[in-house]
Image 1 (tube, rainbow over the protein chains, first blue to last red):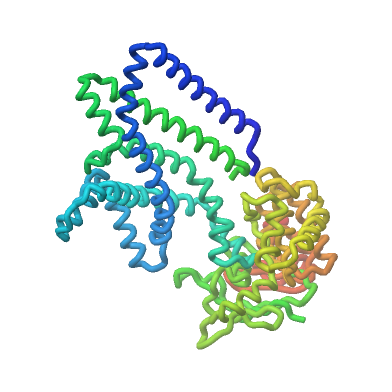
Image 2: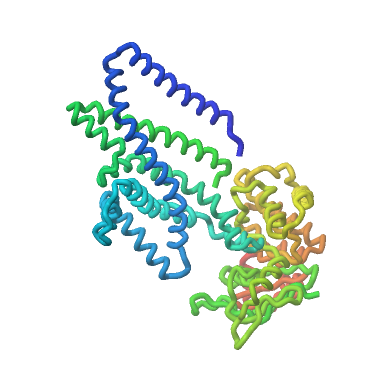
Length: 253
Length: 253
């Protein structure tokens, strides 16, 4: 796969555009523009939360995408028991609120085993809760991608002597990735926004802080800034995923 | 030497529909055998049983004197995986829908199995693949993806892919049924060429005229039985069986 000139040009343009906006903003702050200074103040107050949101987002993706693949395998297992248990797991993860799942993961050690809750555990509970939930969704997306690969592909591979593992790794997986990119993009975008749900277990991410700042300032500005962050971040996600999709389109179906 | 020997194959789906009822067939080295018959007569199923894409209920199967399937207590029993794997190397199959790997270039479609399954020298395989493409008249398509080719070109790649494995016998499952008349003649030309090189082939086809011209033996199937077989001029020009007569009258107008 080659990186096309267009891709490079688009990335350069995007980086340049963002740089210009940042410079303009910094200039406005420097110039003592009241509005810009206020925004900067809010951003300083949110910065810790932004980092927390990004960490949650990144770690959830890092864990849930591969776990999802294993869940998908289990869901398609030849062993009925494994398949049924996995199906139940997926239906619970999809059928109950993520917020409730987070709270259960956070409080379960205490309620079930009387283990005192440390504030460190908040972070782990958030990662565990998000990863388990998103793994279920990714598993179903992967499953649809695998099932979209025509039977003839398996048959051709079998006649050529590919083993089951080789068939999956070389023939099915690459086609699955291509089929699943659009729904995976959807899921990632949802995750960006869902990180705000971590406030349910008092994991201090950006949204929690934005609400506090808004209340303290008795102004809606902080919420707008938070909203702008989610939006810009998702623009970036959509842009990057769109590029990857294009790259994967080197062959049509 | 007998390359393929099938004895008393029986196959039914869901224990009801008897698709193959007691079919025996053997193919000598260098022989070209065409299988004709109406839809649903079991032609394709016979081919799929012979290439082990479908498991047979009863009967035996062997290639080059090596058993792939033996019969125990009236039921087919498949030999251990290691034997089957070796026997897989004796035959190739060309599908009606080509079943090329869409994410591989033409050259990689042809080279991947010889290099990674048969573990042959890459440079050697490449040379052979290019010469096969030359033979098929599509050497300029080596770096194209299957989606960029016409149906006839795709089928030629599929034939080259099968040939690159150096099979002793090559099966064709209605290789021209997905093609329009012009492209059909392209493929028939390739098959004729292979026949003149003494490639052992078993071809399921609806092209009566072609079967007559190219094959050493024609087999006519109906309702899971072989109802007539012999030299093409006998079976096609002077059929004895009423069903064969009726079928030929219909298709040949």
